Image (cartoon, rainbow over all chains, first blue to last red; front, top):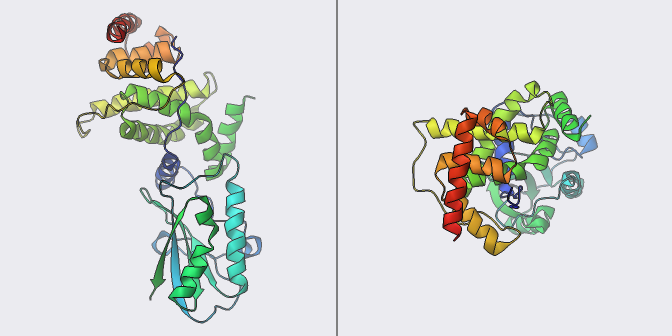
Length: 155
Length: 168
């Protein structure tokens, strides 16, 4: 036998592709987004509008505009080491809780479907565009090389 | 109970993303390495193969009985997925990407060997990779590729001769 390596690491993005394909085929159940929200999860309402799972906020929403933060796993994204997914989710949950305390958290979820390069999304309230940019800059997803795209949401 | 069997049973109980990720992380590096070699270093095709293989494997996972190692079973699924794709009319036939596949332990010698493997005719390459890189027996290869053992042996002889020639 040759001594060529029998294992090679693929692009980390492949895992999300595979999971999305399995979810789309009904073979794997998608984990609930950031389920570390204990109390919030208990009262969670899952709305199936355009395939986005959402959780209701626990506090009155602050005045201002609603914004959407789209979380992208681009090439700079550093995925959690095996077994550390829970820490990452807890980190995001703490951040969302801190927004919720001041009425700036609206909901969170994931976009389900094959080929999506967006790992998740948050809807937040912010006084204005500058405030939204400031909040987006604090999102812990960015610490790990993730890119946060900010859009104002208009109904 | 083996670790693999425990992972499989956990997944079959929950069908959850976390349980699947444990399986994925344990076996995808081996599947990807095999796919990369079977496709002659075409990373895109190798990733597609791995993805389709996982879908096929998860569909059939309840029939896995641990009579063979899970990794061997998964590699068999991948080999069959590739053969199905090669037979499909819709498969694109663009010129393959022949860039070096990935880093290896010994960059010079291993890269030459990887290139030589990538340049083999497909039938010979399949047998060479499965036998000389992964250690499958001719009997196992014959089952995986739906050929007779004699064909596997002759393809291996041919592959080795071509590799020796290209490494000179």
